[in-house]
Image (cartoon, rainbow, N blue to C red; front, side):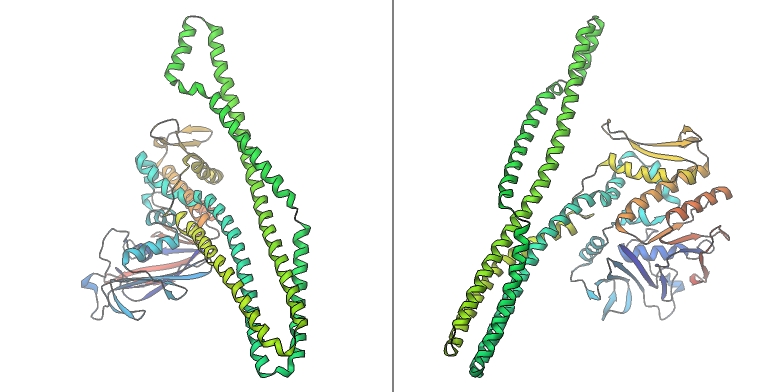
Length: 569
């Protein structure tokens, strides 16, 4: 969940006075003003703070010199946001003369997590860390948060550019599955780490207790009997806890199940090998080029050898059906193996716990026996021996703990880095577009248009096609009216927004002059679509129109006087 909060802008383009914008307004805010009054400057400041890129593609974001007052400090923009209840802030400066977080502003970039400066050197590396934390590149951010008159690119751009855009956008959704599996592995290894940590804590507590007893024995040797009783009570209490836990573990554990599961996994694996051989044998006909295969069938038909032709085709059909059945069996077996391996890992882990508890019980019983046999004169010597023994056990646990901690950290790296937007990119275009089309289909009732975005996987270039249904007929994009085309642009952009932001939980969206060239009835359609999609977000609608049919919305008015913008509700 990414929740953007306050945006604080100073000396950025036409915003000269430090101005705070609350982006977490939980509703619709209409930003209204004349053309050039500074409506879009708010969004431009947000994008510049996060990515160092001005929407107008101008590198200099300082207020124009002729509008700068004598005490002009330069540009400073700060944005605060939360991710999973952790607070982050980014402050970006350009030619800033004042102090920022105790340092000179200049052209520096500051990134904080929970009020602590992130320890990364260099602007480029800090920028990478920001995008890594957000899990959003500039390109994906622009296509999932900002919507304006440039939305036509999704339909009108070349096939290769469309593909490049989708590769980055769909990365957010389809790494989730891999990330889920990694998180399951992380949980398992973290549980093992927690168990080691618990053992470590128990041993450290015991060690501290024995050291305390040893110090007390030197000072108050006369109190040996009471100390002995107290220690026996502690040991008996620990013994009882370990016995209870051991019974719980043994109740749900059967050692024969381990051998049985291992045997089943091996047999299932052998079956998969057999299926792979059968599948390869069944698909031998694929070695023959498709053009030769078709030519052979045509030749048989031309020679009126219909039976041979039918026999040839039925042979291929049978092979394909058999291959499909074999593949389905293989998938079922792989699923079964995965489940049995999970059970096997759990049994092995339980077996390890049982052995550990039996060892601890044996050790505690031995401790109880030894303590009962102790005499006051031997207490100090025996305590020293016990301390040495526990220190040895603690050293053994520490030897296991450090590698396990490294393993957990490595898996966490896979989750946070390898499977992020900046890591592995495995794109399944056809299924990805299916998710996009489901969202587009949900808009049909409001739009009175049905839009589907398709990819021809049979072609080498994987060409994209937009299919539009209107009043029961399939129509070309070029046949639509200007207003209908804009509805298509908006619908496709909104669908991309839903697909990306649902995964990341973004709380904001900006709609910049999206009602241009729309008739009154089409504006009503877009408003209804906005209500449907953005009911749970902070939505900012930038427009110069005086009225919009949006009830329960707030209005932020913008004015420009002598080149500088001002804002008020």
